[in-house]
Image 1: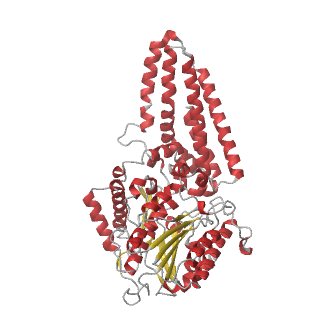
Image 2: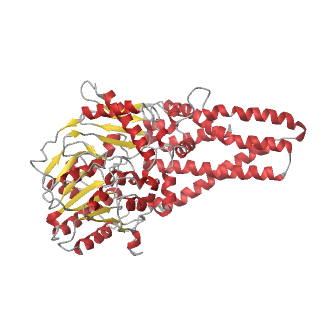
Image 3: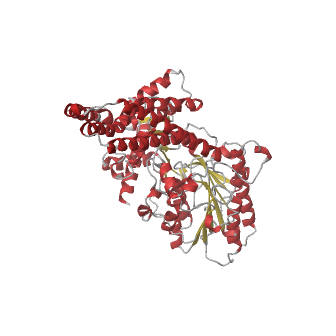
Length: 606
């Protein structure tokens, strides 16, 4: 009962803190959230009670001191663990918008410094104090309850029988009842308000569920038979067939078959920063480059974090709702990649990043993708690494500019991938725009915007500019504005091409797509085979065109006319935008499920 009450109180505290975001009205909806999350709370309480129950049996047979020591150690571990999970969940939800899972554990184990880079000193101190205070409070309550339990050797047989029966009955709340389905995250979903559903979820169960679903990918997201999945994807392709507004053979993308390619991966950028895409005038330099070059106006980020975004861009591999392919080095060895294909075509390839390349196993992925030369924080001086994420973007681009100047005019074609980081929280940059003096987030975006424009301006003076193609693409969904509950709008991103090698200048393209389509678009324009990038589609070619979006528990398909956002945990469509009639909605929904199912089949077999 104590563990159940503790989970309910945590839920109430979470809803109080995030009331401006959840905004449930009437307030009875909060009571509904507590009620619908109660079975999950009981499940966690059952898990946590099993060991104390067995210790009580042990106490009835022996009064040995070691049992009491084990009990105290168990309570101390549980108290600290619960306090840590509750605190992390409370703090991270503001940034990520989903309850705690294995993602931060993966980030922390790969690079603790990078994982904590967004945390300010005050947040760190207050967070640590909160964790310790919470742990002390939970331990004190458990110790008090323990002292109230009296076990005497005289009744050890009856105590053993009763406690074994009661412990066995814990199976019912742990499993979530006696029905066919066992406890899962969907049990907490009850409302059209997704934030309210999140509030109902127990963060301990969410973390445990995520930890136990990091393997056996071929058993996850099973919606239909393999043949049905093939048919569903074929049906999705048939309703998304389209032709480009401008035929590729009439106006080719490139005027150079083997251009120098610069792919600039923009941290957290989105369409909401650019007026030409309907956003605010924040990234005005990128906006001007979009107007003078080629701007794809209907592109969507595949996922929500960098470790999913980089494989989407460089390997045309879609992001995943429940795992990160970067975590599995042995699987990334088998991923095809755009850099790998260009390397086969004679390209010299290099990667530039101002931070820790080991964060989220990124270096292993990049090496597997074909990069032998990776510039990262180790290549900057201690003074240059002033940001919590490493070197600021201006210094990062200085490295790229030095590389440009050192390249002979007759050198082999090159691929340079530049990953920015300054527009990541805590948004502390060496730049002060008078337009955003009181808005550090916008100021950070304006800083990176100024850096990429300065880089482009200097590149224009290079003798190789006429054979250069510059591509700007964000790594994942935008972090501005902070709260956008609309999944599709949150993932709307720019894809901008410019440079002397670009043939289609001062133009826009409204073909719908995502980051995974960059690979096939480039390779096709260069006359190279992009068949290895099986998920990628040429944005400038005829064929099926749609965008795939994945967030924790969510898969979404965006087509030119219809959109389906499906929550796999809740087994419900949480958003849909349909053309008149909406006859295609079921086809798109089944296509989304089939896409996810076959993606996890592919992951299992990598």
